Image 1 (tube, rainbow, N blue to C red):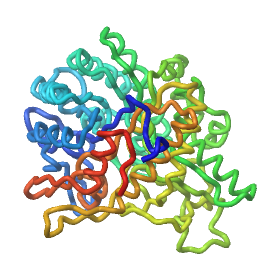
Image 2: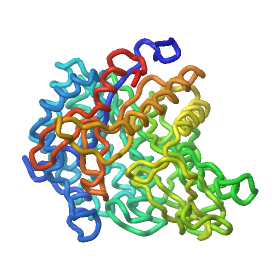
Image 3: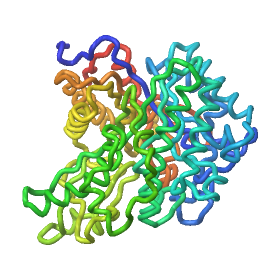
Image 4: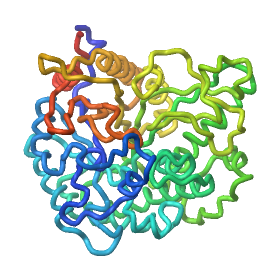
Length: 474
């Protein structure tokens, strides 16, 4: 084993999950309804009619799952808090039983020597707040700050690392423009307002957490995309610039620079004048970050039109992949712009595998963020797994995916990127949003009928990596 395959001492290895995807128990102990409960109950929205119950029944099996984390040598566990479990109405009276669950989870993690990393919003908005207008309305950002204060007051003596919002692009554009995520709306102006108020909610929540007086390190998880022009033509380069603006810079510029990019405002002027941005909002959004979480899965290639391209390589009607994959028009994009496959190997999600995209993302964000600590807070892949006759799950493609991306992360570290840790997505197979239970991302296989857990070969490979800091030989 060469030194080139070894990460620096103290590099953090973890795994990540999300509350709605694993907890189940959606009506237990006073939990209120979320927008994802409503979305799942709407015919045709989720493949197979699947819902968030039972998921992995983590609500009742968290101690067993923490045992699996120890088996995988995890130094940290990134989980999310279900807002409607803590505040069933979105605001007002606290549901103590719901908050007690996270109290128990944190104590169990610490007893196992595992750092708890808490995410406050991984898309399960209380339905009552959606009924009042949801993220397109400013008041939701204020309610989010109130919720953040409640959770931080209870857990902040033991939880040091906080992520406010997970992937605001998905929550705003997939949920409010493309309609493939909850709440399932198709309104580009509402999507832009939601994007802004998610960022505002981040800033207000960060202030609320810090006001508790606990020692807190605060960031958020952003799914920065690698947007590459399909060719070097001026038309494709312009298309990639527009896509990058709405996919990346509309989030990172306010967070890191305190302003929306001028070219994006110009691109979107036919839709809105951004009057939902109040005078003090951008200062709140640009509150200093202690770290930035980076979620990465696959790169994207953009062409100005499908003219002259193989139809089998083109996703029509614009471009867009993100957490849930699939084509869909960018806000402000011309109808001719397309997402173009490069013929690379793909995961079960249909996402092309290219670890160089992770390196490019990390290098770019290191340059743009002024040297703050970066963490890969999600990276992983879905493949069609089966439990074989020997009771194991042999998943060599997933191991190859992780090995390639971990090597890209190491290359970034060696180049000077302040990358301090890596969280695999995901610890467990789980409810994969609009794909229901048809896609498996876990290091651990879950039989949803029996709730039996089986550590996959990839999980054992990752355990060796996490235990030694060296990339294992296959």
